[in-house]
Length: 205
Image 1 (tube, rainbow, N blue to C red):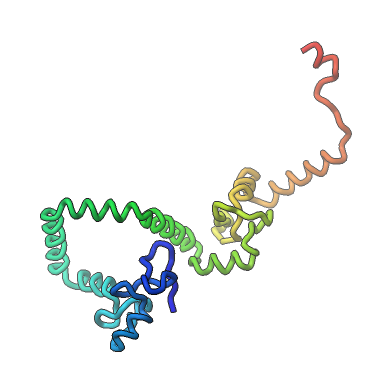
Image 2 (image 1 turned 45 degrees about the horizontal axis):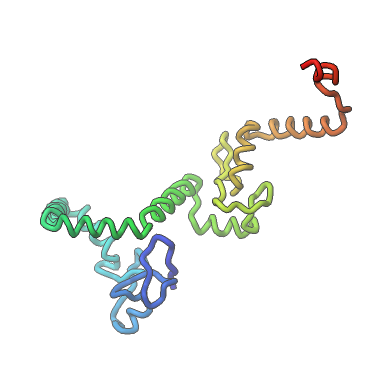
């Protein structure tokens, strides 16, 4: 069973599952149409041809047949010209649902994780290992966690809150910078208090 992400169309029968066809998830659709098969490319979608879903099959067909791709493009442009008002109404409805923003946000996150060989599923697993908290301060981040990595080697280190990530960057993103800051704080704790100016200077000012 494949559950739906926020930016995917939801099935009416089971809102926690992805839509497959006729408002139903694949499981419910297969009950009414026993011959239905899952696509090998996307198991939550119906098989169209050659084991592929409709979207992947169409993409492969266009790549293999440029003439077909060009014909489909012209047909799409012609339909848009003849149905301009309907197209505008569809766009307004689509954008009003907020799915575009969610989709773009998810794609950006997937691209960022892919730079380190990670997926969204890997991120969920790592956060579970960290107790869904920052890997440094242990705090909870309401805005999500930053992807921390070694800027010298490019190696992924963990998921931390924005404040800790910014702090690492300001301290040079290395152990030496952190040790200097730690030494400074320790010396400040033991050093006697020495005001920059005595009371007479403050009164004169």
